[in-house]
Image (cartoon, rainbow, N blue to C red; front, side, top):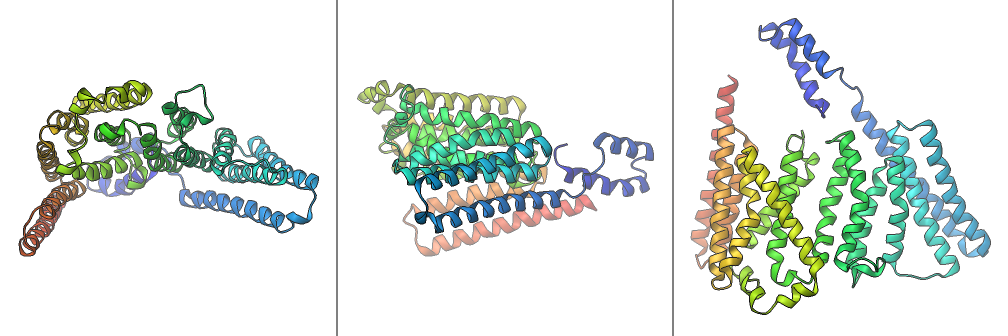
Length: 444
């Protein structure tokens, strides 16, 4: 069991279960032997790690400010030596941590943060001293690439997160992705850079699938990935953006449901939460007819072929994401997970929307309205059946948002809309009350 909160809850219930005769002393002893002793002070250790990172960042920032205050009074040689001295000190601390404190997360994170700041400061100070020039995004990418090995060597989180943010910013600032990778097609450059950081996440997941390091990296990934994803598909997005976006959302949601659904808290489910929010926003947007008027499947057959022939890398990336979404959807169907199967069908519905959207954009919008209705009802029924309040509210949220969109998209007056809102709100309250009463009856 990855999370010790579950174990703590189980141990807290054991005395009452033994007193009621539901468990014997031998069974309780075997359970304790199975899950092991509780780790004390987990919250204290997290606080130590956080303060270690903050302390290292403040020390690094303070040293940089002190240098900046007297920078103009120093000669070039002294400036260069000071910039490199800060870097060498941070590297020395990192080597000491690897040799003497390799098991301490607080020391690793603090040393990694300090060395990351030292790398950026050294690059900036040397560049300013010798007037090497260059754009900010170039500096940011170089800084991130040099700091990425620090993330691997020290298993530090901040350098890895900085890397994700830096490559997303760099990608957004480039006219062509291949500016620094001329031997790679432009649409692949962001993915090559991203692939360099993914093994770090794999190691963090292997160490603790729901730990702070893997969760923080996951949140940074879902916040930066859409930027690189959109830019790497920018040429074909004019026509195929609904399909590309649906594939991305489906992959995030299905991967989160497959590997993060058992996490004890929402903050430990970045892929699942991002996929669910993306599904709601994208599905509702595609339920409007205007979203389909200029993005139709038939334009590919009538005169846009050169767009895809001229950018085969983009087509390959988009199709890979569609294939990944379909593979995860097939896995959800095989496992019989109804909610995941419903949400994961989003790319399939998008393909069907393309098939009818050219001749009848309203038909594609109607298809998405029907699809959202089915998803909302399905999630709502599953929530009632399993007595899970979160699923009930999620289903109600999908249905309510769909109703609101259709009311704002129609010519109904304020009175009709007001009555509809009251009815939907009453439905929310009734559903929650019914489920809470059922849970109370089950407990009694």
